[in-house]
Length: 156
Image (cartoon, rainbow, N blue to C red; front, top):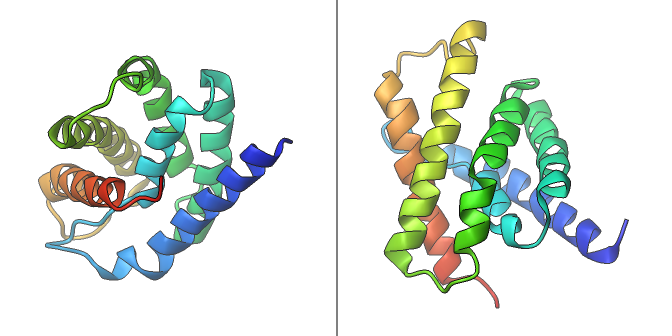
């Protein structure tokens, strides 16, 4: 393992802990943020497809262990990264505007949350009183908004 991969693995663990300790308590109308997801979207420009899929699977399995989903997040995040990798990788060469970054994260988060909702409906992981629209669209919009805010204030 090279040094950059280990550093990015620790950043991913930081985003998982940030989600566990901070963002789980900042729900708006039942919608929550998935900070690991937009971190993985930022890693598209750093790694090739196979490395990023393995990287995604490892971090998402750790996230599954913390949130007691056991494989649902891993499968949905890995499949989403597999689907959107080429599109994001082509767009990462150009400097994107904030609204383009918002739409990119929003579209990817919609794909992720739809896959996650379909998978979780089989296993009753979301056996709560929330509407599917809140889960899919609320989580996606909230994730995209926080992703853009973190993109603005990131350290270059």
